[in-house]
Length: 105
Image (cartoon, rainbow, N blue to C red; front, side, top):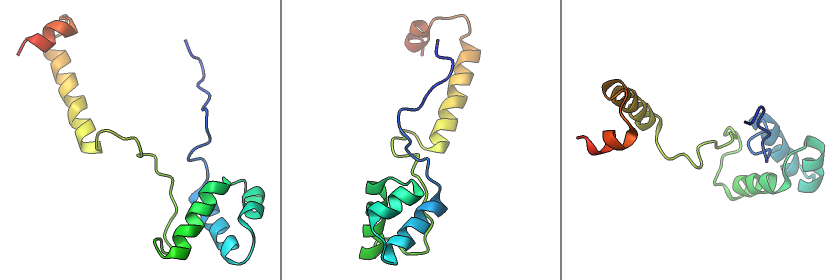
């Protein structure tokens, strides 16, 4: 059994204020590589945000937040409804196997 999970990537670990400061430094004339080394920010992520700001797709003062829901299947409301349904079914059919619950309508 796993005692402590070690994440494989550092995805979503950079604070939004640090990323915003990095974008501003690149706009002020520093190179993307230099800023990414100084602030310990991923270079490709920084360059992607700089391109968005320069092209006008993202306003300069908009908050930069990591997107944790990129692979989210259910919305928050759907997930809570599903959890309630599973709890209700487990209370109704306790002691029965899952296969019997599926075939029992």
